[in-house]
Image 1 (tube, helix red, strand yellow):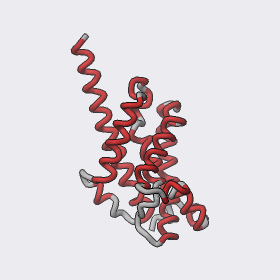
Image 2 (cartoon, helix red, strand yellow):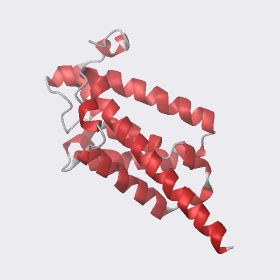
Image 3 (tube, helix red, strand yellow):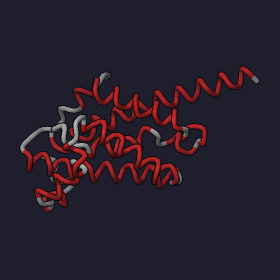
Length: 173
């Protein structure tokens, strides 16, 4: 259905599309979504937090686009709709959680990143606020967009948490 948006994905072989979508062995582990999200934290910590804001946003958009095509191809090869073994969606969503906050040094602490990871997993598993309905979209778009929605909800929680922290620090000064 969405082939016209990522025609390049049709040229991916079964092995390539499935290995990319499952991040290799990660998709075969117990609780693959959690492991895929943890790999996304690694992506954020190693690469993304050092990017300028415009490059960060472009990279997130490019990864989301690529993931939609790859996940679409993998779903077709597997003949399954958003199977748990596909974790590329969680992997690319985690940097979106931290997108604008990555420029604030205080928000790169272990505890803040752990908090963001846990909030993302909550939104990804529970799928509140209509996220469950978004997942029903066909193909790679549906596979990825629910994780992007969970990442945006996580982003909102992190921004609110940071705002409350800043206000509390101003009041104590």
